[in-house]
Image (cartoon, rainbow, N blue to C red; front, top):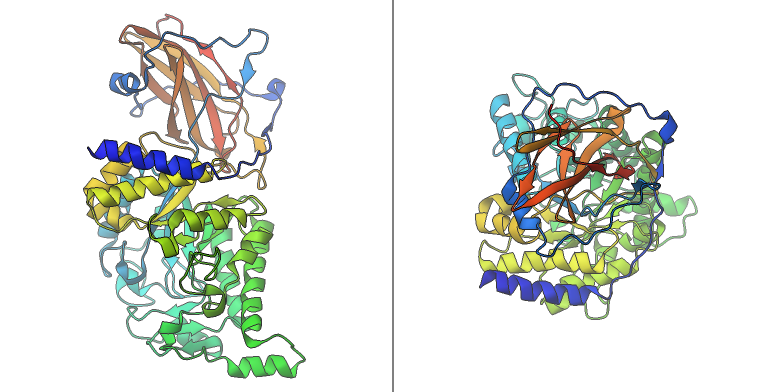
Length: 550
């Protein structure tokens, strides 16, 4: 019954998505001509070799006979067979120990064990990216000369983990080993959270008092109007970008604080605004605040690109730009409360991906998920990635599973050129096994590559060299590459009964075992493509499977 419901709502989602627009993207160019490619003999494989099982193949086998024509002999190179592309990420929050670590003060071994379990979970459920909160309150889950070790890590602000390790580097390495993109999530202006323990001498609040403001709810905030605030946060961002091999930098919706944080009172920056006016400034206070944030967002994007052009910058603003945009939408006005001109940042392309927090249900008329997504899509003038944030924490029953899968299907229909979403958060996936299993079965059954970012890099990597060896009832595919450090993933393509299928492997894997025959259908062709850090995929050539012995 559930699968029938999912089919019906998925069909509805696809119909809704027909109004989405489609934009062609540049064709990737090979970085090296064929004559310069180095072909190396595959090394002996000693580690455990990934396997495609007969059951996996059976699920994908077509029922009709082979109809796919072979590539002409004089044109062996071509675009690779179809591979699903979709950004599939989950937020992992460290503030208040929401997702990790489960509580402050755990031992290094316990922290690492929990981290690996979360990353294994994402890999096993066919996610391909993680958004990890490395700076929850002007503190650090990594060694920093700018801000103290996080209270949420050790229970004592400024105290390093014992035995010592670098949690950010640990997460980064483990994510990449599993083929997951790793995006570092930072709160740009929050200086102290209400759950962050006492404000001690180690706190950034004490170290940088000139640009700190205390709010009525007990939080501390950096004043966004002050140059010292912008300079400091820029230093924090760029320190991470320079020292760590990350895939992205991610800001959430906090710029100026929500009004409730200061119990409805105006943000205390009257003195700064007065100084601005005395110097000849003509903007209203609201426009002045927005301009402070606008210039900062633009600055961070430019600085990241100047240092590492291929590192993506993403923001997940509040999901409603303003009430009445579009006409049927009501809700909080981030433009006038958070002083976030989120439409401008998207219009100008000061980001590489945008993830508005569309945390409402499809049928919730005043904040409908597809209606809001359609509005943001029309504002995506620079054709950046639009990967909405989805709230999956509505419970573990079938209606929530149907809602979640339907929202994923809507993104596929409305955003066909760059599909994807980010799930808030990993917590409900763990809390509700029915939900995570249902997403895997109905939406994420096959692994997917992250959509490419051609404005960052449009050159495809060189082709790998491939060998195919028959071993009894199995075939082993092995490959090497002339620039292995440039590769993030491999895609092994294989054909049974005229239909291509694929398996995505992480950069450290160099071979795959396939069944020679399934249900009377012989493995006829294979091929391997290389995928670089920005999602470009190499040229593809088929290799016929011959009956040979190792």
